[in-house]
Length: 132
Image (cartoon, rainbow, N blue to C red):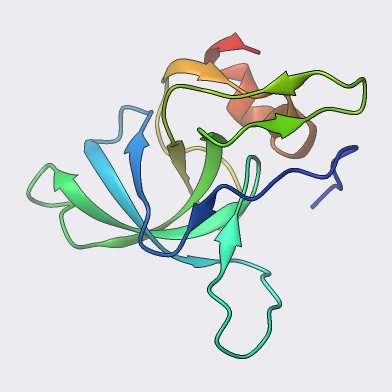
């Protein structure tokens, strides 16, 4: 996975509810882990924009409810700073369900996607309608 040019403030912890922004059939996701997180004893894993996380589907189609998937965070409420000094924040926390290789399972993404996601996951940005 490619590194991002800026240090993203981590705004999503274990247990955070996220909106599923794709058309896979899931509506709401609950974060249960972060892929590649190396923490300290008793420190809760946290993630930011463009991080791969493990989620459980809490609302959506009955066949998807309770299942565990990999996802990528595309929006977060906590503002983060870009290298040029601008600060970016979104209205909600959102993620897109992906497969093991990081390719999106859905065919379209609702709402804006952070530019930092495009640096790591270009296939997600290709199907996005708006990139901020």
